[in-house]
Image (cartoon, rainbow, N blue to C red; front, side):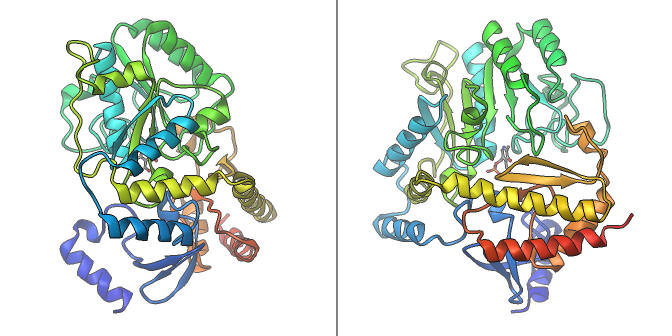
Length: 421
Ligand SMILES: Cc1ncc(COP(=O)(O)O)c(C=O)c1O
């Protein structure tokens, strides 16, 4: 089957010809280690890695073996199972805020429940988020994620059809990294704010010094639930996630991607007093949160996640992951400098991306100033040169080796030289 035929078939049965995630003009046939192949057999170095989960690379033999053993013993039970309990224990051992864990299937769900949890725990309604912050697909999360129209803070702008106007009023939107704004908004509206949700490193923008600490202090002062969305950063920025890296402990975090080892599994993890809202016996009178999911704690996903975490705990893994990222960032900087292109390389050594602009970059509005034409040209040539990456992020995996790095360097050189002036 040629790729073009499949692309044509997809046009009939999938809206916009795709799953909604990625360029429907490429169909991936398989992945192994650091590489993926499309349906025509073209080979790519994979810097998308399933949008983050495949931190060990594709088809890691130990994960495949562990999953195979579990498959033969049953795929899903809806009931508690030992593998899910072990994964919850591993998360509680690793993540500072995690005293208890509730499993769901996707990061979107985890974020949706985390926001509801903040409401249930405080009895307040409003959620504060940051413009440009991504927290999945719930109606709350689809506010001021990628607004074209820039309005005055803290007014929220829905990113999607189908969101009632009334919900917009429950969301307060602030500029990321603006300590003063966060401080005054929280001080003014503290009685109404249930939770503050934040990507500790928002998309690719690092937190300004003191920003996360300021959120922590304000939330503590006013009894607001601080939620770190660690769907991307969890077990990636450090074994204990961004909260370990930055030394700030939220009340609740959400996890996804890496903890499912490539299977649909995500989690809400938090302090026991907040997580008590999931427990009818312990929740306050109006604070109980019903939460059920057919696949929650799925044993196949739990086994894949457990094996992934076990491998990540081995000595030297994070050093290798970060060294790989630093090498690619240095390659991009070298070639874009040589090409005379103003650029920013932002993020973390395990996950980063590039913007064609002068700095500084502190928030969503700064990112919007980047030159989208140059960026598209750069990414386009990278794809032609056999590099598979998303528009927006470059994900590192432990499967990348020196041969991959050499090939990436050559591709980056070609892409940098082709960016228009
Ligand atoms: C920070 C963040 N939160 C939440 C999500 C949603 O996770 P999922 O795609 O599993 O629903 C994502 C997905 O990329 C994410 O990057």
